[in-house]
Length: 482
Image 1 (spheres, rainbow, N blue to C red):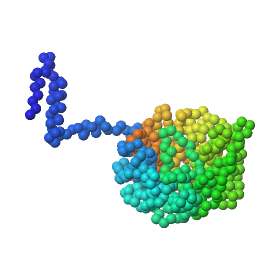
Image 2 (cartoon, rainbow, N blue to C red):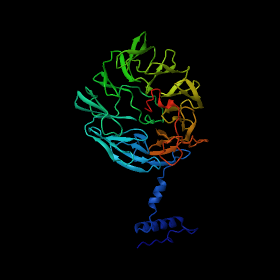
Image 3 (tube, rainbow, N blue to C red):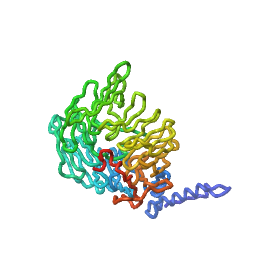
């Protein structure tokens, strides 16, 4: 039995506050030990409660088990890849649907047929999971690499180091679409989406490189094997070319063409020539000189980088220092920037450009080379383009803004230091540390986004937003729709 005497320590000038607090703690401890009442879990939840990561507040906010490596919206779910595990959460509520151990994961498929590829490092094979239930839809035990796209899954398996088979599948298909034979791949086990010879995207602080989600498979893919490039037609699986670059060349496969980029050192500078060939006939279809695709580091003009661009377009710098956007298929100049302007983001449809005075961002439509909208922005603002929204990251004051890429109409305006992690049809995922949250379009804007105009349902019960209905959203080759 515990006896507490407060008279021994009481002060003559008044009641002993410390004694009463000490007595209260003893009473609470006795109640908790006997199971009558335990306030400590509630108190700890209050101390550990997460602060909102944006203003206005997100639809939901959850703390995941570790700092995410990637976050992707897959239909009605959010796939969170961590260092040793992957988990799925409901896009409507944020509640966890399933979790499993995995060293890597990648999402394939579109809004209606998403799947999640998972696997372990240094172990052959992978599994395709249903993003809602986590159930295994297809399992492979031999593949050494996997590439995930919006409309296809490609994998490669090797019977011998010089005898490999590339296979294409529909995201939820169980029968191969085609197979192609390659004389090897990069050495070792490559996990998900190893680099191919294409373009490298522009990046921006506080906007994840995979914010747009999986893209459609390009018409041609370039596989580097033992110093040569094997060009594969992704519609049929035919290997169209087997090319070795010259000493001063770098090869890239962009927009359905095989590009030969030559950088020659002369007179203390680098001279560039870009030649595009049809892989089926090996005939040259266009050529440009004096256009720097930023492939060389100027140390002897050695080309160590892929050209900048996205999907079927390239970014180059002319002799006058102005940036230009080219169509990789036919070499057309889709846009030539003004003096002092800086490209922040580009895809087949639009370009986001920082003005020469660094006070605004311009949204331009490439098909007409016309400025569609302008909005004020800081000199250090970053931006990215996705199929559903253009995302702008502001520094002072810190915030994230999502707009319609064609009209500039605001979809969400957030005061936050969080990063933009994933963009979907009806909103985006933002995150800071282990905290992630879902922002529905219309947050922080004075005018709500347009109502749903089509049969595509949203993943939650709120308002849905449709991308512009014009054919431009399909891309110049309709690769996003066909």
